[in-house]
Length: 151
Image (cartoon, rainbow, N blue to C red; front, side, top):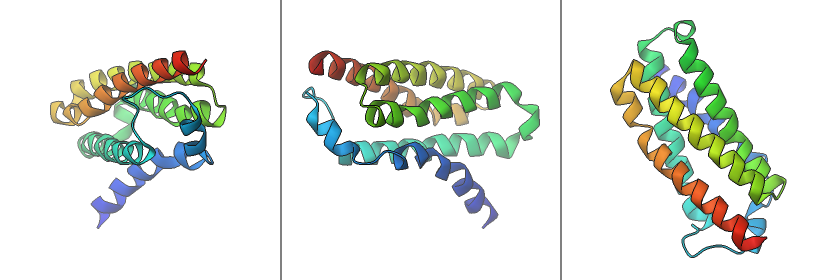
């Protein structure tokens, strides 16, 4: 029971940024979208799976290491978390595809650093982050394409 509770405590905060944005589906549909743009449902499924994988990675690290002893990892994780949380607020809340693109680049860069820091601590834990990095590459391409198509 303790392991499940710990996992949920790590997982739940990843959904906060999405909860703070109201009616983002209407704005997303109003943009000129490329043919490869996922629907809202696909976004929801993918981000949920990614948050679970990120949480699994974090959980493995925190089971193996005492929190204060991994300062670089914690800083990198925090930066990545904040960038990830800012994306829906900037792209959908501020309705800014350009700043969304900039934020997507920040997420991609911070996810690469997170992978690097995680890999130093636990190779298996780092593997849980690979789909997140791949999705972030896609997110950068998608946001840049939306920016050029919509403005």
